[in-house]
Length: 184
Image (cartoon, rainbow, N blue to C red):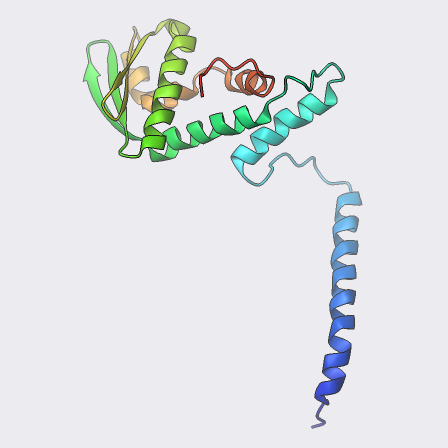
């Protein structure tokens, strides 16, 4: 078995790395140029939502860039993430619906809960024939939802009710365009 001198390896390794980088770049270029289905996911949901809004703003020649505030959308998405993944929800069945106590021990999550629940109820009260109420409580907020379809209200639960209505995409555009209905 022949031994390869270390100096040969040391001298040729950078060339091999450059060749590998060139192959990787060519591979990526080749992949992008192929007829592939349109890719939509940005790799992380908050990033993808911001990317979607940014793309729409950039495609609109009437965008008033002096009023654009994509950072407001990012802060809202943080609130959405906190409420979806970090809030504790206790559900109580009541006549005609449910009462959801949404709370946390973490101040940032408490602030997110209050911002999201109160704004959602103000926007969605009456949708689907549901009466919605919200109030701040120690450590979070309470959302009460009643209507004639009690089983559906209870089946959706807190987070399902928060998703009802395709209003979020328009809401995200409004946030990024400085038409913020929430106080952050």
